[in-house]
Length: 94
Image 1 (tube, rainbow, N blue to C red):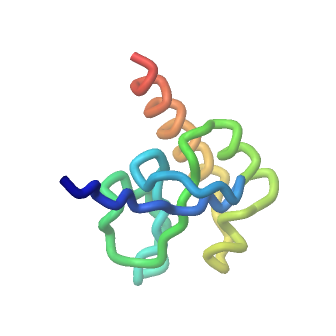
Image 2: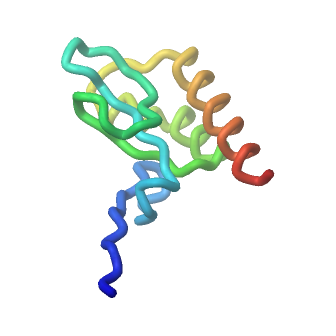
């Protein structure tokens, strides 16, 4: 039986290649809004971050999403992203 190919994505913070399911996608919609995309299927430009709260903090400190999407990202969005990643990390440990 043939093995299925696992889609890999690169984290914008750590530059590590990981399976797509172990990462969270942030998408800039065609309307110019930023959103967390848990399904990975929303329309727009996407970037991936590993499910590590420390990497979200590092992205905020270095303004990595600002550079990735060419726009100013609010602290509220980084806070929302941190809470989402922290929650998902806690769920995976159960």
